[in-house]
Length: 78
Ligand SMILES: [Zn+2]
Image (tube, rainbow, N blue to C red; front, side, top):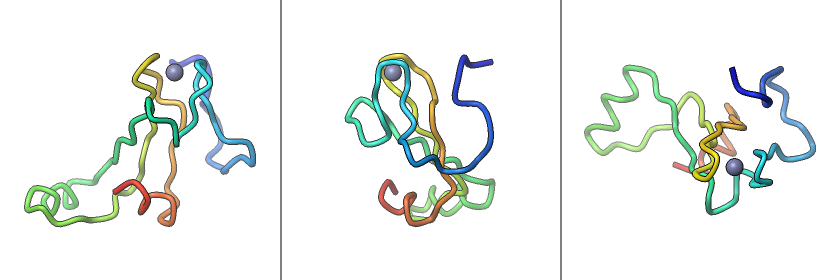
C-alpha cells in the first residue's frame, strides 16, 4: 500500500508528483512501460510497440506516483 496516488484513473489537471515534488517529466523520474505478454515478444525482437500502460517511478523515493494509458502521452516515452 503506498501512501498516495491511489484512486481513479482520470488525468488530473495538476500533474501528479511524488513526495519529492518530481513530476513525470523530471529527470529523476523513470517511465516504466508495462507490456502484456504478447507485446514483450515484439520488444524482444527490437520492435517498438506501444505498451498498455506506463508507470512513472521516482528514482529518489522509489515511489510509483503516476501512470497513464493515454497513447499520445506514452508515445513520448517509448
Ligand atoms: Zn520522489
